[in-house]
Amino acid sequence: MYSVKQAVIVEGKYDKIKLSSLIDGLIIQTDGFHIFKNPEMRAMIKKVADVSGVIILTDSDTAGFRIRRYISSFVAPEKIMHAYVPDMYGKEKRKTSASKEGKLGVEGVPAESIIAALKRVGALGETQERREKITKYDMYELGLSGKEGSAEKRAKLLKKLELPEYVSTNALIDVVNAIMSPEEFRSLVQEV
Image (cartoon, rainbow, N blue to C red; front, top):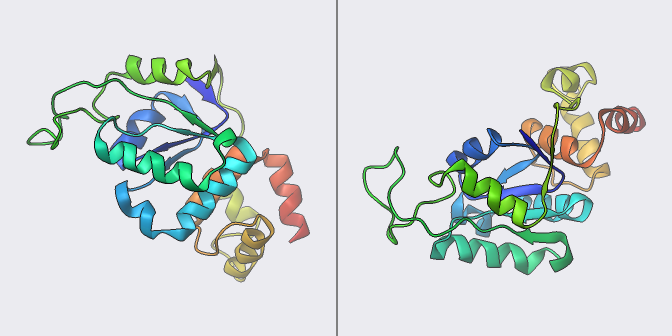
């Protein structure tokens, strides 16, 4: 497993599943064109990009490039790395037919091609043990979920982190683990 400091942006959940078996880091899925109608997702991507940078790893088809250009329109260029999977033709195993352009998406290309794409942009750290991360249990223990007043406390924390109010607990965990250490997070929660 490779360590990646920047958040990696992919199109769909199957891309995210594939990538999560290869890297240790924050993976954000746009749900395809859903990003065009989701200001909270755009705000979260912008925030994460400002802190750690982002790597855009979309499919090599027209839709993937359209999403890539859109993200590039609201994230500063110096905060973006563009990783490209090669054009490979065929269909993903889970699909009954090939895509409109006949190209494999991130989920369908071999793992070696994804690793090579991330290496080309200098995004991969050495293979390493997983570092400590904030978990759902930590969120509960810190009073941010599952307890009386946790929604209000989480709302204050989101405001302090300058994140959208509708960020889910799971998304908050992902973002926090990408932008700060567990110790920094625990200290921040004490201030809320």
